[in-house]
Structure formats: C-alpha cells, structure tokens
Image 1 (cartoon, rainbow, N blue to C red):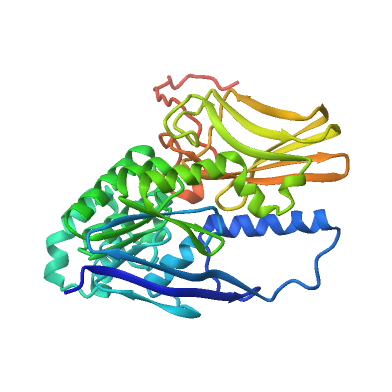
Image 2 (image 1 turned 120 degrees about the horizontal axis):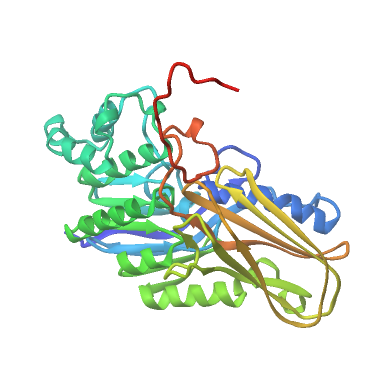
Length: 416
C-alpha cells in the first residue's frame, strides 16, 4: 500500500471573471473587492482590455505522505483555499489532477456542510453519514464531539440560531472527531477566542499523532510552526517554496517584512516614491505581532519607506471587519517627509472589537498622486474574551467590557 495520501500533478484552476463559480475564502473576497476601486482610481479609468479569465492555480505539483502535517501559507488571494476546495472535491480542476487516498474531513468555512434548519444533533449525524460512517460509529463519538464544542445546552436547537462562535466550535469538533483519514482545515480558527484556538491546535496535533494526514492553512506563523512538519508557500497560484517549516516560514516572513510582497504586487517597486513595508503591534508585545488579546491600551505601527521627498503627503488608515464593514478610519494631512524610513505609530486607549479577523488598508498620497494602497498582511486577529450577546445578530460589532448589577428598590422610589 502506498504511503502517499495526496498526490497533485500539474494542477491548474481557471475561472471566468464575473461568474459565480469562483470560490474565495472571506478574506480573499475582501481583498479583491476593495482593491479594484483603488486600481481604477490610480489608473484614471477602468481598463477595457482586462482579461476575462484568471488562473487561481497554475501547474501546482506536490505529494503529502500519510500521517504528515503540512502547512499552507501565502498572501490573500494566493490560491490556498482554491487548492483545498479541489482536494475536498468541492470543485474540479481545469487541468491536471489531484489524487486523494482516504476519507476526507474538511473545514473550509465556518459551518460548511451544516443545514441551518437542522439541530446540532441532526447535523452531527448528517455529517457522519456524508463521511460514510455508520450510526453506531457516530454514537460512540457523539458525547465527545458535543463536549469539545461546548454546546451541550443547545445541541437540540437549530443551528441557524447559533452564534458564529458556537457554529465554528461544533463544525470543527465534527470535522476533527469523525475519524477522517485526511483533515483539511482552512483559516477558520481566527473566529474563536485564544483559548479555543489552543484547544483546536491541540486536537489537530492529536489527529496527526494518530497517523492521520492534516493540511492546515493559516496566516498565524506560530500556529504553523507549532503544528506543521513541512510547509507549502503558495504565491499567485504557484508553489513558490516547499520544505521544512522553519526554512519556508522564515523565507515568507522575510519577504513580508522586507516589502518583497509589495514588489510582486507593484512591478514598478524599484522606482516607487513611497511604500508601506509592514505593520505590527508594539504594545502589548507578544510572540504573535498581529494578535491582540486585550481591549487596550494598544500601540500599533506601520513602516513606510520614502525614496523621494513628499511635499503634500496624506496618509489614510482604515480597518475593515471580515464582513467588509468599515470599523474605523482616519486621515493624517499635510505631511512633509524627506527620503528615509518612517514609523507611523498609533496609540489607542482602547480597541473594543469582537473576536475575529480584521483587515488594515493603509494609503499614502502626495497631493492628488496615489503612492500606495496597502492591504497590510497579515490580518489583525482579535482574541479577547467575548462580552457580547451570544447570538451574532444581537452581538453587534463592538465587544465592550462591562459590569452588571441588579438590586431591589423600594416601592416608593420616585423616578425623576
């Protein structure tokens, strides 16, 4: 019996621009949706010669052995989710082939495969049946699945009433516990709080130790380092580098922080007037410079390289939620900068956002000239305790710490 669990040969996937067939993870949709208008602004008008087709993947080849844990990293829109979707048999490749040997459990988006009208209990059994499991097998795993997800009180409630956090916890628990031989996990752990992220990573480690194969997409390099033996760096639909985790992650981080990623987006980068190179959380400092686990105070900095003097500089910073809603925006006017490397430091007394992934857009202009618009990787991950309503539709965007007291008052209390 071959020890290869996944074999990919010259895999390519082409989409027609504008058709609904193309699938993106939410962060990829945001990147494309917000980038297009700025491209139009910078060019003056939309191009009439834009290609009608785009290759999400092109000539991708690799193998994954049974029991191997492989990380997949890369910028937004690089093709990572498209690759997992092909492996999960959700979409078909345009060229080449992907051979997957074994029962596949996948978690590509929160609640993938769940029917909103069915209860949590019914969805567990439905997911197991789709995987080809017998009822007796699911029965043996049921209590463990529910306990891991922490949804005991709501297991007989339709999942349409679940919060995003509950939905994600149950979906992950089902995918990880129903004995898949191959587990495909896209960047979904960012939805949960920090403790649940650790719990999920521990479970994926247990799955791997049990001899099963794991492919894990993440923008958090510490998670990749902790879990993965080998890493594939996907860039613009190609495998840019593959190898031991420490080598590939180090090369990727160097490219991100040096501004090399900006050069691939802007071919004219060698002649740029000003470009953002990176961003990071300065305080409170942790081993993950894009993760914040407190509501404040917080210091965040953006590094800008200026190659030519700026006379009428305007800097904009915008923060978007994972749903594309503008959370916060600010504009700094009348900047005069000589050539050099600059730190733009933001000191925030508080950042009371719900846990989840957020996206920075940093812009810079010299008068009417657009110098840079930067979707600054990686995402801002908020991993604070949750102080909002358990149902998303009532939870709102903010996550404000509070104290609640209740006391009895006399009947003769007068309301003024």
